[in-house]
Length: 151
Ligand code: HEM
Ligand code: HEM
Image (cartoon, rainbow, N blue to C red; front, side, top):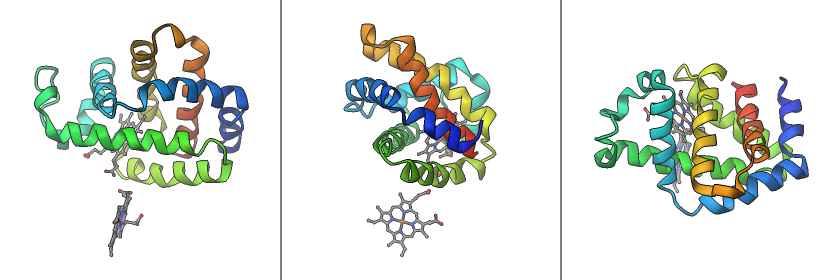
């Protein structure tokens, strides 16, 4: 999918509404970033190879891993940055492109980036309970598609 196409999709009012409804329920807890990373390592174990800098990311060590804690908090604000640009297509594209550089430099392209989709869906289901429908998850995946399109 092309970049413009993915941006058109995610910025439709219905999709923005679905993303914001669920984001508002989870945004306040920055520790959700660490939980999302734990889910990534569990559901896409190959991703651990890309995160060697973070050291021991086995489940038992995750609560003690301060590098992972720092990364998780940073990641959470990056997600917030995307959500905050949904009303301006130019800003959304520019922020996604800026963000993509850090991942391309580490060999994380669209295929690897898409590994976050299922962990993100699981986090939303855990944190938003009944509120989280398949439509919410599809809307979030459209946001991930924007980043994948620029990678
Ligand atoms: C990049 C924050 C001050 C030099 C960045 C990035 C952030 C940031 C978030 C992007 C990180 C990344 O993409 O990995 C800040 C904050 C500052 C600050 C919050 C203080 C309030 C400075 C200062 C300098 C500086 C004083 C140098 C005089 C740079 C450079 C980059 C950068 C060279 C890379 C820019 C690029 O090539 O994309 N900064 N920064 N920063 N910062 Fe800062
Ligand atoms: C670093 C955000 C998904 C691989 C980062 C950084 C942020 C970030 C903010 C720090 C930027 C920097 O230090 O240059 C996100 C967000 C994601 C996501 C918001 C999706 C919701 C992924 C996925 C992978 C990945 C799926 C690989 C499978 C990496 C790697 C680093 C990184 C290897 C460098 C870690 C380090 O050594 O500190 N990510 N990321 N990211 N990301 Fe992502």
